[in-house]
Length: 272
Image (tube, rainbow, N blue to C red; front, side, top):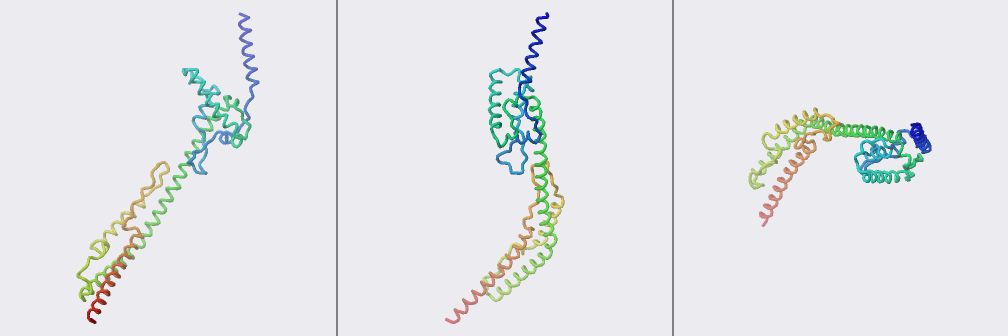
């Protein structure tokens, strides 16, 4: 009995000595841990926060023995192979002087406290990344909404004046066409521009009202992957209405040019 107690005591002493002899890792701040083990996607922008991968955490926990119970049913050869791959990965980190500025060694990755710190820092890094994504999405949403509201405001403040100009231009087109047709300077009555058709003015007002109302209800949603649903301005886009005015002016110029060309042709015939 005494012999067994003596042997057991010696085993504990030897293990304690071996443990004491094993070099402890340097004391690292959470920021240093993130700098050493943190990574960014190759597609990430420069301001994207670094995060610690799940594999890095798993490797640290299995090498340190923290998760030994989770792998007890895994065949020894498979577990040994997994640990070897983990050591290979960590070795690349250790020898990278740009990342390992704290003099970490491969054997330090078998330290349970360091593994626990890696787990904690990983959780923090993921939370920081999520917060960064939400802040970025919020800023992007707000920018989209501001642009949409600026366009809607421009539409609201300029619509009636542009409709008045458009109405005058359409009347000018009709008057010009009838006058030239009466003088037989154009071949018959022609169809006017689409924007000069009946009820087009009311159509534009109705569309503008709908668009302005929908824009006023836009909200930033940082938790959503979808951008704010900015309505399609289409025909009531301020630029589109300006283009419509130009088209009517161009149509007026065209029928006048046709009339002038016909008039010159008739003059030439009379001279002959």
